[in-house]
Every structure is written in structure tokens, then in C-alpha cells.
Image 1 (cartoon, rainbow, N blue to C red):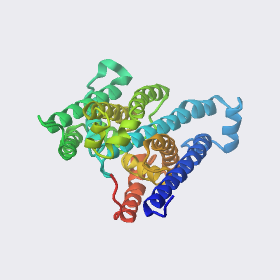
Image 2: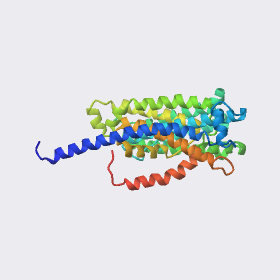
Image 3: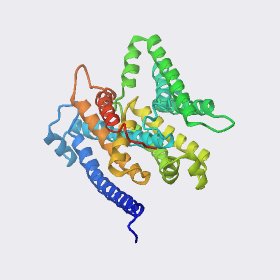
Length: 353
């Protein structure tokens, strides 16, 4: 083979890809172990005064009735919901960033989180959806998340297609509208209900139970599955819509499927946890730095890393007490904002997308 820098560049690129894939495989294995270890470790954290010995005895079949209630009824579903919400928000953020070729894109930018929050606030403050009983909050969150999706897509679509920039701007506008409506509810609602609405919008898993777990597992699971079935198309779309269409991708249909999957993942998450920010922004960046831009590896990395991250944040929030449990949404914002700024400053000269 002649001494040609093009061959050297190709060999180097192949070597880099191979190295990133190997690193991604090892990261997935380590995150699977970390997921199991973190889940068990988080069982030892809670508001009740249980010692480590009490938790171990309870897990082994001993312990009092109160210990069984604390571990199996309060802590286990709370931690499981945190893991699923973390995974769902992370995968949704990954899909948004690739689909819009913008590292700042996320479910919150598209307004989906704001729409779901408004629907849940209606259920909490005024009893909308009361016919569904304990499922009224999830149902209202799902309905308004889908409504937000339809509004954003309806505002952005033109006879020439759906420009990405217009779609993002529509998301910002609709999200701001629903955010203002949620603030209006907080302004007019009765004081005894206001505290519940405000606390819910801050994000917390302490009201999760096994019914919540099954709801979030099914809905978020369907959304994540819809995204994961389009990973090849997502790789091609992230290179450019024209190139993707040339390679046989139906961009419009794929985008609709990804948006619906994202709305399911976000709506299911917001329904049980409230509004939790920055997870869908930070975790995809970390996973991309570890495993590269191939979504075949990014998706499992985001699922596992998001789950581990959210469980840790929930455990830390339950370890900090002022007048009550610190909402996990506050903690993720306090930690996530400066970390995200650090990532953007570190990578500001890179061209991605």
C-alpha cells in the first residue's frame, strides 16, 4: 500500500472507532454492576430511623412489620421509580439532541415537561381527571404531554416540511405558555393545596408506590422502546436529513415516532416524579464522551447511567433534611447546572452534528 495520508487517516479512524466501541462495552458491563449495587445501597437510605442491621434483617426475611413496610412498600418502589425516570429522561434527551443536531435540545426545551407539569397541576389543584382516582395525575400528565407535542408540531409544520429551528422555537414558546399557566394555578389555588402543587413541581419520588412503579415502567418502557427501535435512523439523521433520505430513511415518519416515544418517556416520568431538569441534558453528553456518537451504544449507556445517576440523587436528597425531604429536582438543578456549563466550556470548540 502506498504511503498515503488518506490511508493513515482511515486506519486511525477505524482504530478510534474500535477503541470507543471497546470502551462502551466495558462501560455497559460496569454500569450494570453499578445499577445493582446502587439499588441495594439505596435501600439503606430513608427518612425512617432504620439501622443497616434492620435493613439486612428485613431483606433476609426477619425484622418487624414496620421495617417490612419501610423497605418493601416505601423504599423499594421509590428507588425503582427513580431508576426508570432517570433512564427515560436520559434516552429522551439523547434522541432530542441527535434528532435536532443540537446539544442543547432536550424534552424541557421542546416544552413536553412543562405541558405534563401543567396537566398534573390541574389534577392536584382542581381534581381534573378525578374519575380515574389515584391515576388522575398520570393521566392528566400524559394527556397534556401529547397535547403539547401536537401543538409544537402543528406550529412548526409547513408545506415545505418541518424545519428543525422552527420546531425548537415552537417548543420554547409552548413550554413558556404552559409554564406560565402552571404559575397561574399556583397563584389562584387555595393555600392548603398550594404546598402540594409547588412540592410536586420541584420533583420528588417520595410519593411513589408500587402502582406508580407499574405505570412508569409501562409508559416509559414503551417510549424508550420506540426510540431504541430507531437507533440506525437516528445515527443517519444526526448526520443530516438530506443524507438520511438519500440512504432510504423516511425522515418525517421517523421524527414522528421519535417525538411520540419521547413524549411517552417524558410524560410517564413527570407523572410520578414531577419536574426534574438537567438529566436529559447531562447524561447524554457523558455517555457520548464515553462511547462515542453511535446510538447503538449510547442508548444502553444512557439507560444505565441515567438510572444510576437518578438513584444516587434520590438517596442524597433523602439524606438531607431541613423542614422535610429535599426535593430531588432542586438537587439535580444545583448540581447539574454548573456541571453542564463545565461540559459546554470544555467542548465549545468541537463541531458536533
